[in-house]
Amino acid sequence: MKLFANPWAMKSLEVKLFNRRLDKGLARVVGKPGSLRFRLARDIAGVMVIQALSMGLTFAVSVVLARLLGVREFGLYSLAMSVLGLLVVPATFGFPQLLVREIAAYRVKGEWGLILGLLRFAQRVSLLASLAIALLSSLVLWFLSDRFLGEAVRVLALAFVALPFWALLELHGASLRGFEQILVGQWVSMVMRPLCFLTLVGVAWVFLGGIKDASLALGLHIVAAGIALAFAFNLLRSQVNCSLSSNAVSQNPAIWTRSALSLAFFALLNLIPQHAGILMLGWMRSAEEIGLYKVAYQTASLIPFGLMAVSTVIAPTLTQLYAMGDKAKLGKVMFAASAVATAFALPFLLLFTIGGKWFLTVAFGEHFRPSSVPLFILALGQFVFVAFGPLLLFLVMIGQEHKTTLVTGITAIFNVVTNAIFIPIWHTSGAALATSISLVFLKILALFHIIRSKSCGA
Image (cartoon, rainbow, N blue to C red; front, side, top):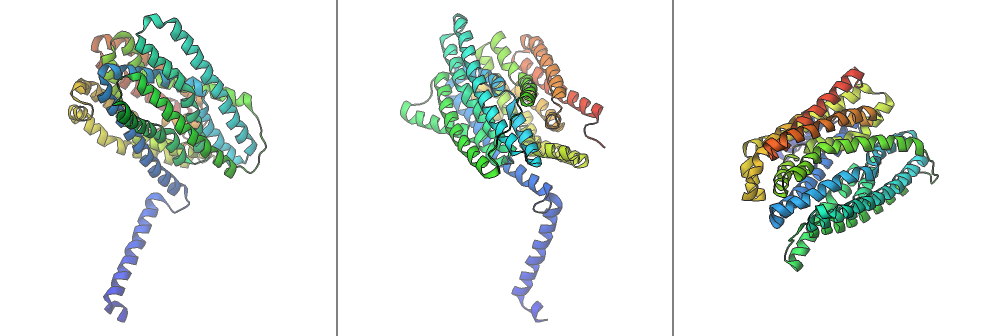
């Protein structure tokens, strides 16, 4: 009875009971510490923080450059970055996704020699491929230089110089994710480069009075990528030394090359819907319209934030569960990933469809108000794309590259055709409509192939 007569003891008992109920409630939601659900929830939360920071930094880069460069120079910068984004895919040779998948699988089987062999093989091939592509692209640009403005030639040439840095940074980030260093891999590949770039922009502002042209912006991007790559290299070397129990190297280049080529082709086709609108607007319209469309596309790209975070975390888990034959848990992970991604996409959808003009004016300035209609169209397409969940990732991580390649190839052709039809009629809105329709079409085809092959298993 004295226990309950003491108010401090009573309060302590209430706190303990509350904490016990809270712990049980959290355990039901995220699982017990050490469980698969707990680990995935922890990593998803961490990746969301990092990707939120990354997307915030990337968005800040677009805002800063749009205001500093103006519509025309920002259009040239966007064109160069789209070309660089397309060239990174053949330069990385399909190794980023292969590294995540195979390192995760080799770790389950204890095949340490194959991990070392794959890391060295991927880095060597990617470096040679990126240098060759940069050299070949520079020669083509030199032969066609009479057809481009002098400033456009300089910006594209700098994009080719940046290619090896981009490619190797992608590989190092993917390798760290394969070791289940999800947060570290995301940090070096997604946060450090834009963070370093914004820092360099600040330095340029202090010493040069700002950034006046797209060429200087690309030059600062190259320096930022070099700094990020140096950090990534040291982190991966430390992880390899700590994780691998043997220094023996095993090689399986034939299988790696075949899988990497398939994944590279898939990734290249997957990029076409992202960049076709910008490239075809550049071919058929003007640099100003490229800038308007780029702002709309960059803004709408905030909608898949949750899907990207979830996909990054569950990628090695999908491979491990499939290798163990646990199809029931696979289905649960996929359903949870779709639900989380859709929940995070909904607020962005409401903001961009209801308050698009206001948001664009506040963020980018009055000159970018015409981007509101393309933004509305792209926001709807991106939301539907997210609601379907990580279907293509699922096919890739269980080794069904041929299906992802087929689906993405059909969608890429569909996207180019619809852009060619819609851009002459509706200009930037036509490019947005073609992109949105293609995103939905891609997920419908992927879902059809999953259901048809019964990959999910019931």
